[in-house]
Length: 101
Image 1 (tube, helix red, strand yellow):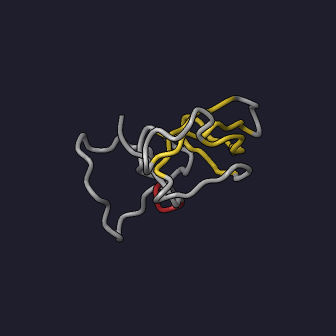
Image 2 (cartoon, rainbow, N blue to C red):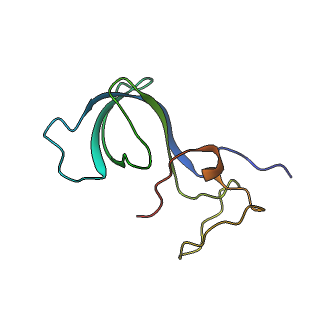
């Protein structure tokens, strides 16, 4: 049976970065992004490690909020284990992934 790519996805949209660190930079490696979604016009404030994933005003990114990194939607194990290259993961489609609670 084919896997459902949408299984476990709670929210997905494209966000426009409207401002970066408007209250000043508090951490050396992290920037606070102020963004607006294209489809829902909702605001998002997101902290990102900009040393790993540089972001500037005017950039766009796709945000996906999911219950699991598994493409089949099944729950992840309680402990994070690095996924080997033979196992597909929702993370394979992205340059930057935040995982955890």
